[in-house]
Image (cartoon, rainbow, N blue to C red; front, side, top):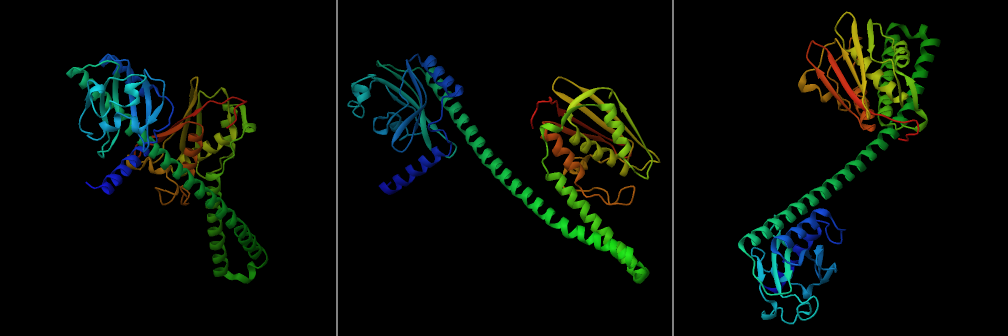
Length: 406
């Protein structure tokens, strides 16, 4: 193999090493535990996890040495990487022409014995070694060599987990960036739509009030159609703004009675369809974001009424708590949700029913908003349901204090 080919391959190896983001990182227990085990298994004073950079040898963990790196020219491990499939063992470095004049052999720490297992990744590149060192000539038993090989495999596992985590972090950052851009886009578009939409609704109202006699039946119908369409768009825009709006503030975290909360909530629920709301174990005071909790329950209860096929919508709310969380459930006697669709209801703009009990088509924003609020407070929400047997939404939300700032 020519010099150019060797240089190209070495550049690839160094790039592969840098992909792990391991160089110059701080000490970690997992790696230090491996060098401890290496010293104990082989009964040596010095053990290292070394990585071979372009011009240096850097130690992720070093037991028995105080230095963190050496220049590559003096590295024994560089020689080990020349044959990455083999264990490099030098019983007496003073008798090996490659190392007789090495300053670490001739001077402190007067290294005499070296054994290193190359760290070879899944792409076949040697990154460094797990090595043991002594100041006297010696050999290792088969069991000691097997132990070193096992420890080297563990280092590779740690490296691969590290690279996976780094890649996941990059993906997470990119997703957060895109989500932020999407939120900004939605907010701008929604705000830009609201102004002309309000003008359209006002114009339609003026036409209806002042010029109804000139419109005729067909004109009135067209005007009603225009107004209804504008109201649907307004509802969609308001839903988008509600979904993306972040207004979790300290001053709206307050102490309030759950009984009073549900009583006042029941009074604002106005539906032509009859319903009965029952809340159990709610005679308690809680400290939480009342505005957000209202938003959650208005969505859940409204859905229980709107998508109910029984003469009377029966809705039961239960509450429990522990030291860390509030637990709520909302159970109804409605149509139920098929198992294969139960997670879809939390997807933005996804609707399962063509129309609700009032003849209106949902926008697919309510339940995604509920899920987003709950998860913002370190909670979670689940569904239990069968077709024809109603539905139960159970969720937990982290407890807050009056001084809690979210």
